[in-house]
Amino acid sequence: MSLVYITNYYREVWHPYRYCNDLDQTQLNPRGGVSCNMSTIKNSIAFALFLLASINTATAQRADVYLQAADDFKKNQKPDSAIRYYEKAAVEFRTLGNTEKFVHAYTQIGVILTRQDNYEKSKTYLDQALAAGIASLDSSNLTLATTYLALGVNYSAEENYTQAIQYH
Image 1 (spheres, one colour):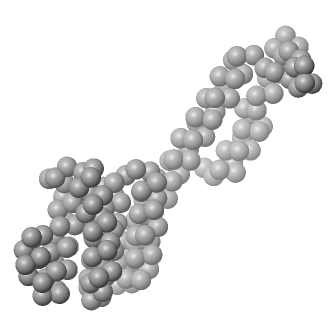
Image 2: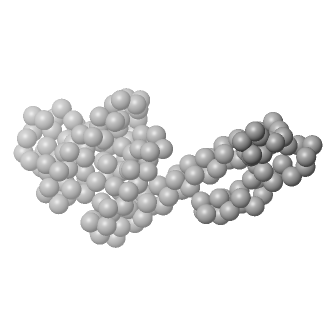
Image 3: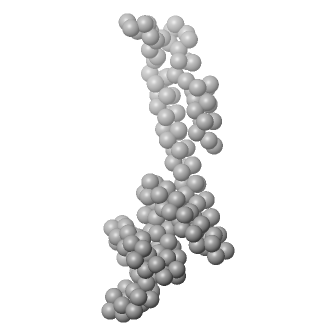
């Protein structure tokens, strides 16, 4: 359901003044406008809440589509496209407050960058994923464990075995 469709639906069906055509339901406002009764206001508030829920649902669906596209690109060995879509998914998940999927997306970016021998940039993503995961996920969460493991692999690839042991 697109935002344009919802907006048009609101204008045609739920617009508050649609229910104010009866003189019994309206009062003339001293400024020349029309004010509606309480039921019309409640309908407007209900529609606004519906609209907000629809937008969040659309954002969640878009985030999952980005994540699925990124996974497909990664599986088909197109790392640059995978990174781009993991970043888009991460932005959406952060907006939605879905920390676990945000951590997953950033961890996958870190894994791809480690495989490309781009260790410093990989650590940047993995450190952000780890910080977000520690702040809000349970210490036994598998996504967080994957982030720790990816950091250990990164440090091991750099031959920094002291750091690697801390994260493995």
